Image (cartoon, rainbow, N blue to C red; front, side, top):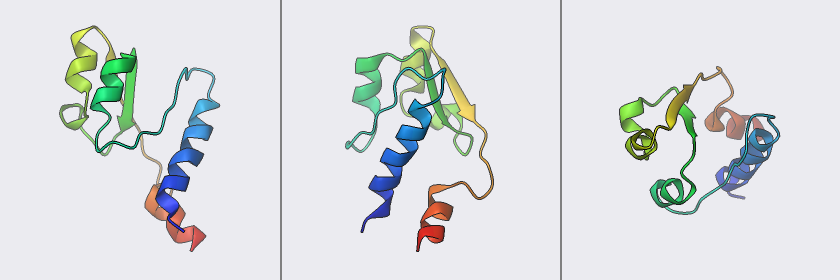
Length: 87
């Protein structure tokens, strides 16, 4: 069983349950650039293991006044840690 695709859908369901979240989607492309361009999000969120300069779509989102937010990471709550627990 390939766990990463399953975990992406699980994570999307959890995030979609947050009151301030309007849309969560899982994409099959190598990068979300086309999806970001189509959706034009007000806020683009990525984990704090990235920098704003390395977030795909950050320049585009900022170009129309959107924000890029780097979310804090919690120890032990990565995809890798979750897969290890499931095995």
